[in-house]
Amino acid sequence: MSKEQYDRLHPDVRSLRCHTSLERKIEFLESSERNGEWVKLSLDNAKNLTKLRNWKDVERGLWPWADPLFVKKKSNKPLMDRWESVIQLLLIRRDGGSFKEELDQKDEIIAALRAQVDSLIELNRTLQKKYAHLVQR
Image (cartoon, rainbow, N blue to C red; front, side, top):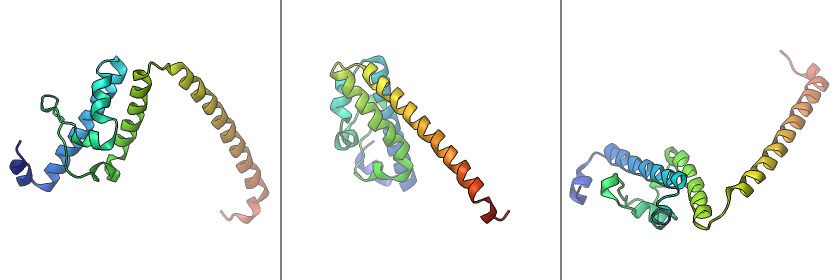
């Protein structure tokens, strides 16, 4: 599609086209990370927002977009969270790192968070009992 054709599209269609391209780029990155293939290509094309925005691969339906703020839209936050995660994983894979260390850390963090939640639940119960007379039902 030429620039002139793109400019003639309805704004909603242009936005959908950009969103679809962003989604496809992230799916390609996630597939690359899972399969261990195309890691260098993926990082070369998407390791920062400028590269991600400019990445073009017509055969895969990956198009660039002009607006650098497009990825900052609230509706794109879930996709951008996925992008940040997969880039970190691709960097680890590129550097030959092991995921075991990261998984061990996550287990420790999860255990600490569970303990914190249990503590907060107990504190909440205590406060509810102590101040139940103040709450009108």
